[in-house]
Length: 68
Image (cartoon, rainbow, N blue to C red):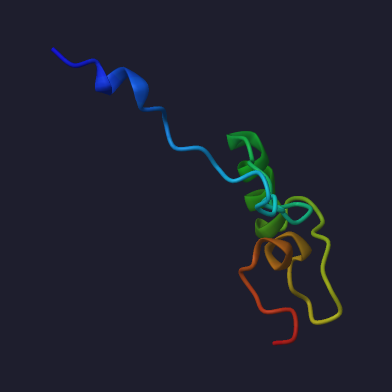
């Protein structure tokens, strides 16, 4: 009986690949963070907006094009 299956290892990521960069504010949110963000959009909490009136967090997360 052959033991070839023991010699194979899991595929490895090349060490010269670029790291994945996550924009600021685009990380993983908790459920409470999401509810707070919805409260900002509902007007319960003041919302940070850009000069065009769009939500800055939604801009960072990619829901709007910055030049649109």
